[in-house]
Image 1: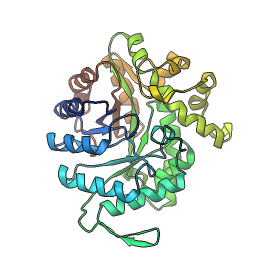
Image 2 (image 1 turned 180 degrees about the vertical axis):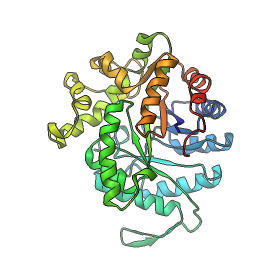
Image 3 (image 1 turned 180 degrees about the horizontal axis):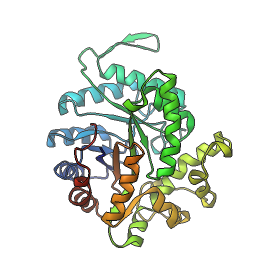
Length: 335
């Protein structure tokens, strides 16, 4: 059954994010996540400590971190420490790095480096010894488990997720693209001798429950523009026939992207995004319309819907889901 998460950007003050995390827990959410982009927003790990000590049940993690902002041993140690503080509630979302890397003039890392980092961080955080650049290394005090969720769009990264991830993060809610993506996750799982059914699937996207569809679209138009950063990279590395038009066609009208407005409602660089793309990539509209979209995603095998809460009323969105949508999914997720 579908479970629910919510992701925050860490604008100050941290106390506000803690309040929203507590509201999410009280509203029936199973996960609270935060974007890990240390220049654009406050650092995730001190805020995670506050969330962990002010909640009891909800699971906590970055959505997503990357292998290069911090040394992988530092990431493993931080998450293992937080696992003790939180009573074993930490999870890790990780990708190649977008805003956290680009705003300091660095590119995303390779898929190969991402895959190696997933194995190293998980092993270290769960107390196992690793070969760290030729040196045997172990966090002997660490206790797991630390589920690892990999963010991916292209076939190569999706296969990586199939080989190493406990969960896949798809940053969009377009059922067609989600279904297209899962074939590559299955291929990766098969390559590694794993069961695809053991990999959880997340759809992460903005949501807005309202009768005013145009207002909802204006609140979340920034999101397909954010996705376009990853799609621009994909079209440089893959033949047109290797990627679905539903994912690539919309970037033809894009002319720039300003990371100063990354994830911000009203971002000028998002003006190229059409209403049709917004409707496909996000979960918006009346409660009935949102429920229909969520049921469609669930039928494809999505285990968690993770709300990107960067809208004018994040508390309202959390409360709307808690009252009108989460109760429709009895039994929660597989968390």
